[in-house]
Length: 103
Image 1 (tube, rainbow, N blue to C red):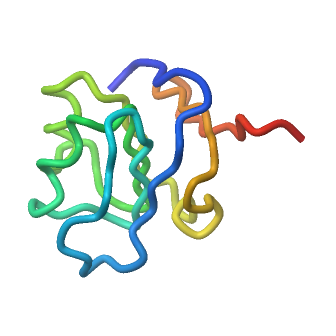
Image 2 (image 1 turned 135 degrees about the horizontal axis):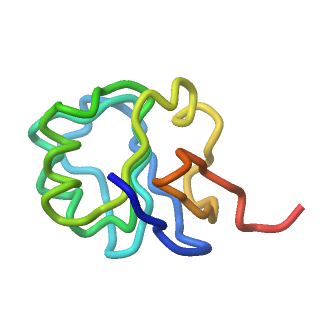
């Protein structure tokens, strides 16, 4: 999915892949190791979705495409590196997640 999510969105990273309904507010960047169908209903409110795993044809990514939410898959360690609440800019065209908090 091409697109730029914008600047300075808050990262929401669930503590566990078994968390049933992570808290995601409109405009948050959803970051997780992977995303199953239970979490798919949260994706349309996110400003972007960043997943360590997943593949372009899988269900969560099709949901992102359907709702115009930029996504990055196969980010490998994003859920380990990005902190809960961290402000980031996501560029879905380039596959970049950039720190928006300044250096």
